[in-house]
Image (cartoon, rainbow, N blue to C red):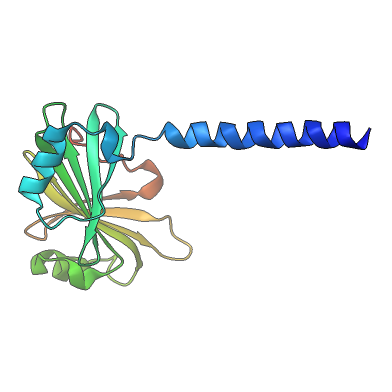
Amino acid sequence: MKSKIKSILAAFLMLTSFSFGLVACDDDDNHANVPSEFEAALKQQYPDAKNVEWERKGKYRVAEFVINAVEYDIWYDQSAKCVMTELDYGKNVFLVPDNAVSAAFAQSEYGTWRIDDIKHYKQLNNEFYVFEVEKQGEPDMDVFYNTSGQQLKAIPSDSAPDIRPETVI
């Protein structure tokens, strides 16, 4: 009886392990599934990109990598044309290259709030920053700036849109 239970348990464990392996293989985050034109487009645009992971987000392919502590997400359409870059500076306001933006944030009503994340988006026809901030007793906010440092809007983070190439700000 014990050997039968052990056999059933062993078979169950093997099937469970196999199932997890199949789920892991279903991931599109590898180079084998990325057409060469996407790899070439990335190499031309970012020759220093290393340890690139690829992901599919809807109709887009997104290359993800890190250079100098900045996380890059490069969005490509079906023809391997770059349609958006997303740079994630984390909480590091000193990494923001546009001084007008960091100065405007520091002088704004949110300048004393704790920064959760800073992202810089470059779409085909638009470029902006989003500061995700929080303060105890207040709703978390996403504060949008153009590259000149003008605050575009501030909205609660839970109602902020997911930024994609077609998102209008």
